[in-house]
Image 1 (cartoon, one colour):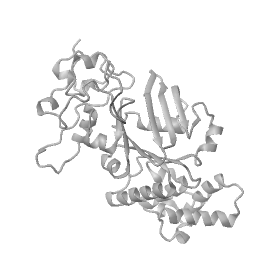
Image 2 (cartoon, helix red, strand yellow):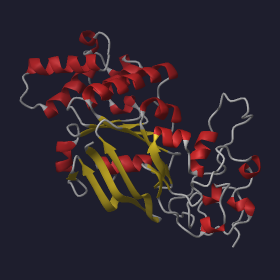
Image 3 (cartoon, one colour):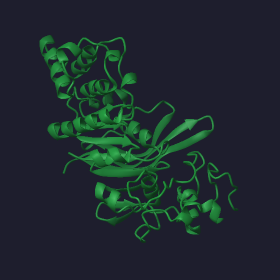
Amino acid sequence: MRELLKTEHLSVSFFTKSGEVEAVRDVSLTVEEGEVLAIVGESGCGKSALCKSIMKLLPKTAKIKSGKILADGIDITDYTQRNMSRLRGALFSMIFQDPMTSLNPTMTIGKQIEEAVRIHNKKMPKKQVKKKVLELMQLVEIDEPEVRISQYPHEFSGGMRQRAVMAIALAGNPKILFADEPTTALDVTIQAQVLELMKQLIREKEMSMLMITHDLGVVAETCNKVAVMYAGKIVESGTIEDIFRRTAHPYTKGLFNSLPSLDKKIRRLQPIRGLMPDPANLPTGCAFHPRCPYADESCAKTVPKFQELEPGHFCRCSHAGKGLDLYFPDEAVNETAYEKGLPVSNPGNNILGKEAVP
């Protein structure tokens, strides 16, 4: 399969008044033709920073420190905004989290889609442009497009606004679609409809997609590959089957254990203790060890390697493949590294309100 997107050891830093903060650390990933890759993790883990660095939408206070970004075989790491403007929409396009803030409230939906069409088809006659706009509205299943084309964003429902944003994103026939929490602002029923539409478009248009989400239900429904991020690094990656059925990293296990279950044997939720560490003051060794019920002294000292457990299934944990229970044992849930008295230097946020043992 052809690689449409690839990052090699990508690191991104933000420069603040307090100093440099590394938000993305040594991230390598690949999206092949026809694949849908999900980037999952808690808020603040670096998902959006990774996506924006690939799209070159980082603020002026951020910079790609090292690594490469390859789009359809082209090295775009050092591309200027002028060069990127030729690729955005044509090679890849983005669907943002909140459609209401993505759309111009003073322009009709039709005009906004038309603007996107004209950017990629400068010599297209006016009649053809309108025809293309209507075709895009039909493609994303906006009902009565001849009427809707003259309406404003506030006249659309949340689901219809998201469809309009999708129409704009598809105007240049992109090969890769970036979706940043595309269904967060939608209710469950509309969410299901939008996800089904996205899957249909990916099949029909033969596109690939990189989806940023914290919703594992959306991942199971839409994606075929998953990368789990924590503190700026990918800690586990693989196919849906690898991540959902052969979970290897304690953090990934924690994400699953935090979800409600229909299994009557699971009496209560088992949330991950504490909070994400401060990216400006990360723990030594494995960044997850202060919250990990399986952590031992070596976890505080050694940065784990990103090892391949099975073909295509990678994990960044020294305990991976050692038969950890899927559900955190009850005694471990209430006994993280801090409470065990393990030597945790430079712990970042003191998540349990206790001093680290020197």
